[in-house]
Image (tube, rainbow, N blue to C red):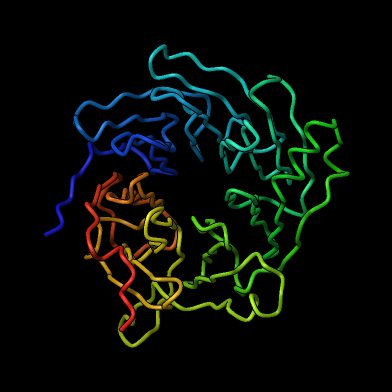
Length: 338
């Protein structure tokens, strides 16, 4: 029987979650209340928090640290924040709010993406410098795999950069406008992209939209690989005879089993097997619309953030903001083929 652990409530919407890359019990959360929260699941009632300028839209762990994270948000800047010292350091600035922050170990750099239609790569070895990549539109979501950076933008555009090429550009001092985009694609989904995450296998990525759909895509441009891509409907309910559609805000891959979770404005979370094209499980409703999802590093826990102000939520579902940790069992494992 799976057990759920509810963390202390947040006072405002939870925008983002990030589990530590190697410690399965450390979770950081970003909130619209302008705080970053550090949860140790071995002592869940003891929560550390650090205030920053502006609401937090995304968080990512700094390398080889259990107390330092990178934060981006409405302050139009990326900062490192240390829960041990309460100190923060400026990493990069943008002209508009920073929607996405990731750390690339391959580049030893912070990658940030903004509504200013740029992606900035800021190496930790040379503070204050960034490779600025101009992109086609506002960035809504960003995903990293071992070899690729996937940028999901307005206008249903998805650009994919090759990390090896970015590394070469950093080493040679190439200007961002001269960096070649590995692939430029249009989303398979007809409506605005909400989230993108890369497969742990580095074979492709998954996107979600505001209109209750998910697409599974593959990097390999060959016709054989592209023939495998597909999309499907989810997070819909028939209410009084009307098919009601919800945005799919939460998206996370299990790093061990390769399955993925989606969370929607309908307050539900589902687990999917991308290769078998099947739903493995739908969990009972959460208190409010799902705003973020994240699996821990060993795939045994799923953090589910719910936020009552999240757009497209179920009418009347205003039951607070918070994070529930779900222990994962067989429901996140692909079904064995008969």
